[in-house]
Amino acid sequence: MDVKQAKQMVKASLSTKRYKHTVNVKKAAVHLAKKYGADPEKAALAALLHDAVKERSKEELLQILQDNAIIAQNAQNSPAPVWHGVCAAILAQTQWGITDPEIISAIRCHTTGKPGMSKLDKIIYLSDMISEERDYPEVYELRQLAEQDLDLAVCTAVEKNIGWMRECGKTIDPLSLQAYEDLKQQVQKAKQEMEGTCHE
Ligand SMILES: [Fe+2]
Ligand SMILES: [Fe+2]
Image (cartoon, rainbow, N blue to C red; front, side):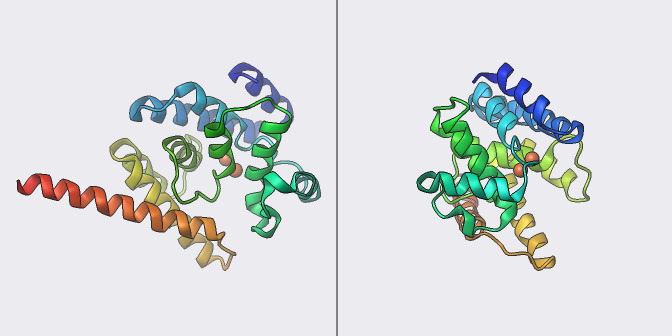
């Protein structure tokens, strides 16, 4: 499946509102890919497919996870809002002809993040949170950070997500906590290196 086919598929299967979100995520992802030296084509494909099954029923998503237990890796034990990313990643491999592991990974972890996120994982996670139609108060800060420092922006985005979920008493996927710890370390390391260079 290429970008054009992916666009056609999601247009046909999603509500107008979610399709618009999807196109906006694609726009943000292509922009960030160009800015930070990732492959814009891969970013476009991952963005177009990230929410492709978000409007399917919980039962249907659970069925996909159960039918593909090896790929799903116990994802049914994760909070239900996480399932649509894992299911889209499963269908990408099994039905939509996506073979690129980077694209599959970015689709899969777009709601949770994960430790050791690739540049594309970070771009898709962040693009999903700063897409044009989003207007929650913190989005302006995240958009600004996204233009300055990808790692810092994603780290802040994951931190905010964890904070919101805690406030609402929602279960936090362990992957998000691991992602945050990992990103925090990356950001601190970069800061230390920067300070080191400044002092030389
Ligand atoms: Fe999503
Ligand atoms: Fe999304």
